[in-house]
Image (cartoon, rainbow, N blue to C red):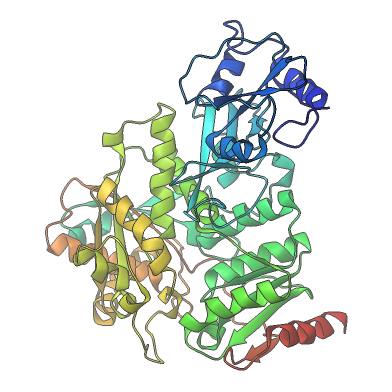
Length: 526
């Protein structure tokens, strides 16, 4: 019995197709959904027996290459090129592309989503969390297709835009209130910005661990729940790891968070269960990522999460800005490696794709870096489209002004950030410690009048963003009449001075990953 290219039997394949799309034949004018599904596909013809009863299967270009290797011997025909007319055979079976996940919302939207290689365009199932294309090792992206009205649900968090997020089943959502943050106008700060109108999106005040990274944690840990992933390994300077740990604890998952010992003071205001391990690394940050990945590999664990998975969470910033403040000229964020702005532009691309927005209405992206960790600013000003490890500082002072903004991800993320800045006619700048100190007083005073407090002893990234705006106003890049939305990246929320204790402190140059895990397992079982 012939097996189809996706591993199921032909009869099973036909039943799946009929359940999903009806029993009509392909190219049936009465079945637009089936026709839409067939668009962009290629046909493969194979002989199923000596009597030459032909069958047809539909595959993408990636599966076509796989089929080419499998088809040989008697009955094999040359695969037709895309666009070639093929005579309809006597027996026709249409494969449902199991790599494309379909969800129907209560609002009547019908969305399919999948992963696609940005280079060779091979399609990968969204039922996998992988970092790169298996065929060519290029980055992946999520693709959303179908019908979408643009109307959010009545939720008050980021999942009100569930239809454009890479999750198949809403029962797997782990929200904890992340996203859906209010936008606050601060008219008294206009004079500092050349007459521009400043608005603040208060992720710092609404999200459970007090930073915008809770958006990412909500999406990634919901994905882990849906995919059945456990034993999660991640690293960060503080905020991403705090958020991931908080959500992993909520799900009862085992996690391993590696962070610089220098940032231990930031470990407040999040939950950590007995299976959530916090490992301080006594080394410079560039040494932490490679060790964490090695730890995951040698212990058979899951290193999370790929860039394209993470940036989808920040597309929600675009959806919320479009829904709450459509008349916006500039979107501003303090960055370490630029995932927020990359995701922000991805969200607007989706809005344009579904006919909800014109390209001219997309806000210009403004990125602000700390002068001590400004490698992306330096690269962009130099006209570079890529970065190498040589573009990163070889040493950092022990008293970094804001260590949260120290990252090795710029090398990997910079091409996407550069493209986002160019596509949006964006701007990138940097500011030093003195400028932040000079401008932060009036900013914090404006917030205090409204009962909003930032934990500046924990993080100063939003203050860096405001100081960057003041610099751009002085340079004439923004001015009177401009509507500017600044993301309050962190740190707000409930004040807590109690440091969550670490499980171990290691030196990555000498610590054996297997032995480290054994020691952590002992702690779990105590």
